[in-house]
Image (cartoon, rainbow, N blue to C red; front, top):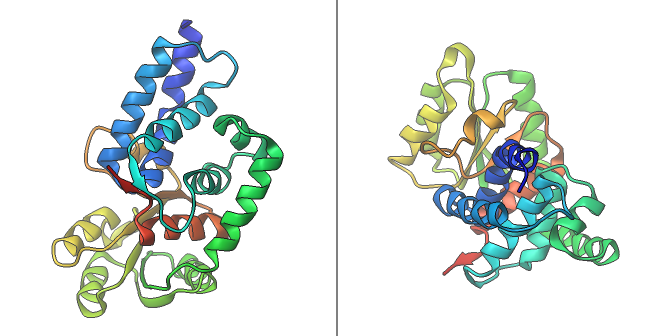
Length: 243
């Protein structure tokens, strides 16, 4: 592999980590998938695909070998949803990454989007310091079919609301301005109530280094309703059952 190709793979790592964690529903398993996929790509020939697409494709291949069952959607359908919404890839690029035709990808993606409508409803705690953004997120969450457990603008309010409402999902901004830290708030909440968490941030690459405990689900501000719906589906259903 050329030095240029290696640099392209390194540049693609934050995106690969986000995708792998969302696909697996777990930071540790996702990062292990990235390490394994990266090793294979560094020692193989992948000239037909850009580094980022090659990583996506290899991650799906690796994960398919580590699953025993699939709930709700096939792995291909989940991967297409994540690639086109969370990773903002075109349908053509997603199809290339998965080594399927664009027509097949379109059919699978349509089926997957239809399946999103049947997602189990849950209660969502929103942690966001900006009131207008919080209202927008609340609207998106309700449009996804979920109920609002509460809206917290500070770390202290988030912990208090979580203790009172026991939400089925937490959607948290990382930077709460003068009101504390979203990750700290979630850390405190998870000590008393285990629940899936989706973090939102304008700078996802800062959270996807693989060097410490980091979020399993990260979506980038600003985000579209479909990206939230997909992340919520993965978080609530727990993704695909691992071996």
